[in-house]
Image (cartoon, rainbow, N blue to C red; front, side, top):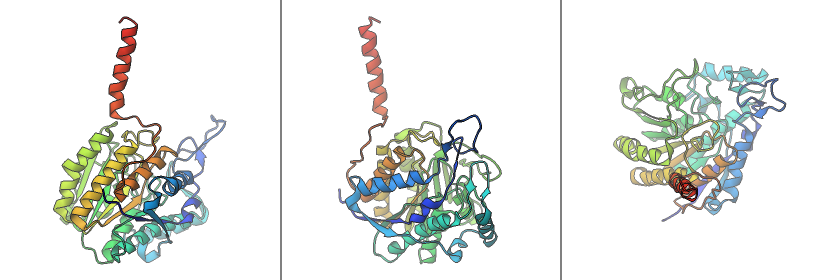
Length: 364
């Protein structure tokens, strides 16, 4: 297997977004002695950064500086009125919903996430690298052109796609394997045929006024965008095999037919088997497989051009291991991610035989 070095874009300001503590992602409760940190916190990406810096794939990663997004860049996807409203909220802080909180001053982190994703496109456009990864937070794929939703304020993945188009690329395929439906990305590109959006997610449906989209297969695009939005809603507990099969059976044929100039992966690890926010049950090896398969597809279709933008992943330890495994796959390196707690499909068979052995010893 031929591996390659991948630049990872990072900006320290992404750690400045303070989401506070409470009951998971709800406000604090008098019923608790100690509140729990909001799942979308700085620790989760700090751990990912450490895993990438110290893990087996570290020699294949080079670190580059991100930056803050400009107003003009943001308004390629978001409306000017929406941006003005975010800036107003930034001055005093605002709870946009029960789960999505902006503390005063958080726009620095939010702009850093967006700008770092945009900056990661630049070396691909310039022909300096074929692949890049933006390690950012807060996540973005729920943010629509004029709507905050699901921990997301600016849509980092969509803004990266818009930057690629502004840089001369004609057709962008966005593959989103975050465990939640990429509703903001879907909405922003729903009537366009220059961006193919594919979302693999647990079948959670709509969840309120900020997320009216169901993520169902019937949401396929409108107007000239009809057929250019593909939703793959999984039942809970889908696991590694289902995700691999969905790529081969549904996602990759659509991407091949689309013939993109660039594949952009909305790269969330909250589909992992220990995530508090997801029920898809993927292992670290499962994420490695998805990345390796997508790398091969990019080699086939785009000359290897592939951009990864960090989305979710909320178990502070296991998501970091899964993030490392994903970058290992994108780099084309052998799977060496340490995984001390994985529960794999073969464990079920071993568990069954263990029970049978105990039953035999008991004379049953």
